[in-house]
Length: 177
Image 1 (spheres, rainbow, N blue to C red):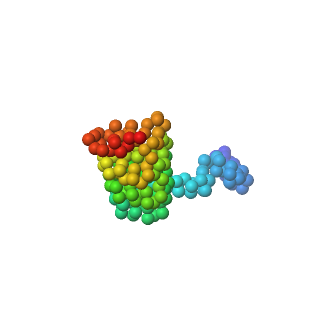
Image 2 (cartoon, rainbow, N blue to C red):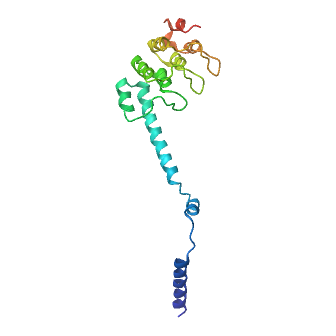
Image 3 (cartoon, rainbow, N blue to C red):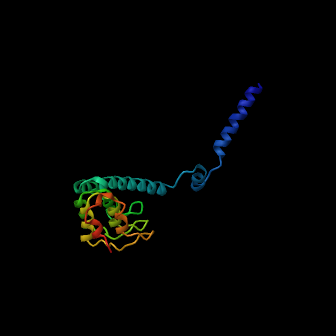
C-alpha cells in the first residue's frame, strides 16, 4: 500500500509541476542555455561564408589565372577587400608570376601603394618573394612608390637583396632610390 501512495504522491507532484512549472522569459532561457541570438548566429555564419570565399580567392590569386580569378569573384566577392590585413595585390605580388593577374587587380581599383599590417607594399613583397622580374617592372610602371618604408624602415630596395632570383638582373637598379 505504501508503494501505491508513493507512486500517487509522485504522480501528484508531477501534475503540479507541469501545471505550475516556473516559466522563464526568452532572454533568461537563452542565457541559461547559452543559445546565441538568431541574429548573432546568422552574422557568424555570414562571416564564416565570407571568410571561406576570401580564402578561396586568396588561393586562386596566389597562383591562378585571370580567368580563374574572374570565375571566383563572379559570386559577388569584393576584390578590393583586405584579408588578414593585406590586399589581394599583396598576395599576388608575393607569389603569382603572371603579370596579367597583377594588371587585372590594378584594373579592379586596388591601390598599388597600400601597405599591409607590417607596412609592406606590393612592390616590397614582389621584391622579396616573386621570381618574375616583370612583376616588379609592371608595379613600377603602374606607379608603385619605391620610397615607401615598412615598419622596420626597409624599402623595396632592401627587400630585393633577400631574393636570389634577381641576382644578375637589372631589378636592383630599378629599385634604387
